[in-house]
Amino acid sequence: MVELFSGMVFPDRCRRLRCPFCLPLNARRRTLAITLARPVRMIRLSLVAEAEDQSVCDTALVRVKRVRQALKRKGINPGEWCFTIEKNPKETGYHAHCLQTGGYISQKALQAACTSAGAGYPDIRAIKREGIWTSRYGLKGFGADGYGLKTFRPNGDPTEALRLNNGRLEHHSRGFYSFEGEVLPVKQMESAAVATLNADQPKAFVAMRGEYVQRVLTDRREKHRLIMNVKQRTPTYMRAFR
Image 1 (cartoon, one colour):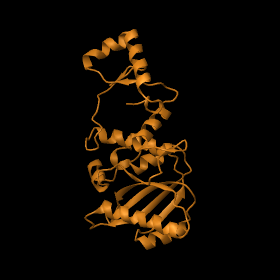
Image 2 (cartoon, rainbow, N blue to C red):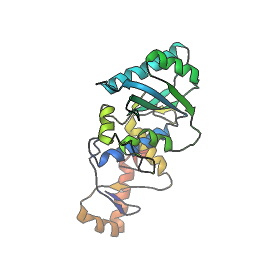
Image 3 (spheres, rainbow, N blue to C red):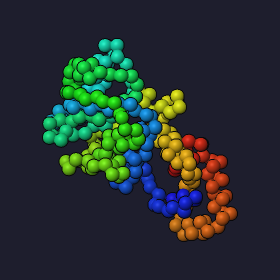
Image 4 (cartoon, helix red, strand yellow):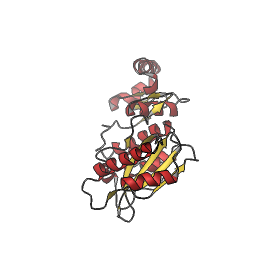
């Protein structure tokens, strides 16, 4: 892969979650998408599955759903959630890190909803520090901590994090990935996020055989032709990153 404006060269990748090289890169792209959704609160549900549970993710999805349903029965709009499941530090079960967009939920109301759903003791607080750090924290188990955050706990690794989450980086409600008033598929949201990140730094990534790289980078006409080709073929929100 060659970035034609800067001349940066790096290996292409398969982008599969089960690839140890691609998994942390996929996670970092996902954190950009989560950040672009502009979550306003962090929620921690302390017990979405017990330690001995053989179907952790399935149990967790049911309990999170029940928490949201309990809030709705009380007339509280839970908003949109994105969450990842992790093992509790003392191996007493599993918790979920959630990011929420939408209206206010009181600690008292959330506690009542968690009690009815069997989801332990929650914590909810406003996100006061803008930026990507909250998104990276939620996906640290997948290697999204490459920007300086602490690593996943010693009893876990990216493969384990993927297993706990049934082969997914995160779980989200239908309307979580919303950009400029439009709900986007997650991959489009990632592309929009990367394009936004690179808004003032135009990018054009092209895949080519290694022996062609030097010739292309030194041939101004060929480089310009490739840049124009990228611009014409790729939608605006996907243009900045392959």
